[in-house]
Every structure is written in C-alpha cells, then in structure tokens.
Image (cartoon, rainbow, N blue to C red):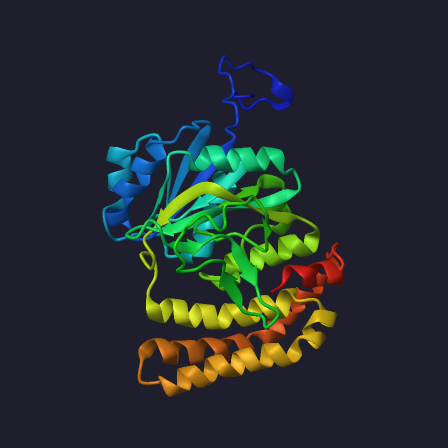
Length: 331
C-alpha cells in the first residue's frame, strides 16, 4: 500500500490491508430508526461472523444515523445528502462493499441466527447460483410465508412463492427459483458487477425481479436456501400508494426489457389480459388512492417504453440462455 503518494509503490506502509470479508451486508435505510434495534439484534446473533455491515442512509430526517453510530459502531455508515430512492441507495452501498458476496437486507427485517451461515453454505455448494434467495416469514406471524423465492409468470406478473401460506416445510428443499427478494438475498460480486447493479430508473420496487431476469438471461441461476430465514415487517419500508405506482410501472418495464421476443409473442394474450385485468380492477376501485396510483403507474410504464426498448436491445444482445430454458423458468 502506497501511503506517501509516490508512484510505483515508493514508500512502504507498516499497515496490513484488511482481508476482504466473505459477506458484505448492505442495509438501505430511510427514516427506519424504529426498525433498527430488531435488525441489529439479529445481526449480532449470527453464528457466521465473517461479514461487514454497510448502513446506507438515504437522507433520513429521523435519528437513524445517530442510532447506528451509538448502538452499532461496527457498521460502516454511508450518509446520503439527498433522497436517491431504494435502488440508488443499494447501489451506493454495493460500490463501498469489500465482500466476495453481497447480502441485501431490508431495514425492516430481523435475520434468524443461522441466516448468514445458511446463505454461505448455498453460495459455496452451488457455484452457478449468482443469486441465493432467502425464506422471508412475517415478523408478527412467524409461521406464515412472505416469499420462498420469487417466480415470474408467463403473463408477465412476478409472484412471491408461497405467499401467505403457513410454513409447514413445503418449501424446505433447496431448489432453483426465478429470483430472490431484494429484502433478503445474496448476490455474487461477479454477477453484480456484470449487471452493474440494480437499474436506478426503477427507483424502488420490482428492481429485484428485473435484476433476477437479467441474471437468468446471462446464464446465471438463483438458488433457494430454505434454512436462511428472515422475519419481515411487511410494508414497514413503503406505503400502499408508493408500492402501487412503482409496481404498476416497473412490472411493465421489466417485461419490456427482459422477456425474449419469441416468448413475448407466444404469451402475448396472457400478458395483455393480465395488464387489462389489473387496470379494470383499479378502475372499479378508483376511489381509493392506491388504485389510482396503480393506474398512474401503468400509464407511466407505457410512456417510458421508448427508453426501455433502447435498454432492451442491450439486454437481449447479452442473452446467453436459450428461450426454451427461459420459458421453463416461467409459471
């Protein structure tokens, strides 16, 4: 390490560079101080300890940063000067990460003690898995599933596998899934860098589905680690109107950017029917703000298609997996 500013390594440092940790745990935060005690208690209880924590704050107006400084001094804090959204905040944290594998963890979660250990087992045993999806259970009802890995429908609608079901072991096999929930998943650095992280145009919501789709096209797989459990305070980091708008918009963008042309054509009737059904349901409930937000999101998705289609050309040009393989991943 050259500390004197001289070229060619002149001037030797007595410092020994720190060894890179196995995991970098990335925690994006916006006004989430109420969630942080549960989150950091879970991290402190981990059996697997070869990890660093990067707490990326998105210009919070509460005491989040002060709480972490006082209560979790081991965390590296990235304090933002302006609101960049969930996606930009995660990308900023990833740029600062030193780990071989990045673990995305929402601020409104609490990992079980063997969460990181189980992720590490799957990362090491499945080298072609660029993403490892965790099992998310509800924080208040710890036997109910939020997601056991994400799936993508032939109608273009992403789905949480097992959502709202009682967890009775029906998803306890390690198996391939379409993608992982960005609230709790591991991503190999090699894949993250190849895809240049999340698409910052998405701002928040569905960015993980888009990332997983691009990873699948590139030839990577997503493995499900059923014993890597996280308890999630559902809705703790977003609101109905926000989620309705961004899910409506970003679902259309994900589909337009990633679905291979032959599959778009063969499943076009299902895709159109699904979007019309969503719009019709929103119109029936248009007195509600979330329904109106969903309609605005769909409209924004359509208006953004010219730019997204330019991105599509780049994504499809990098595709390494055959369309038949991609179709088998869809449900």
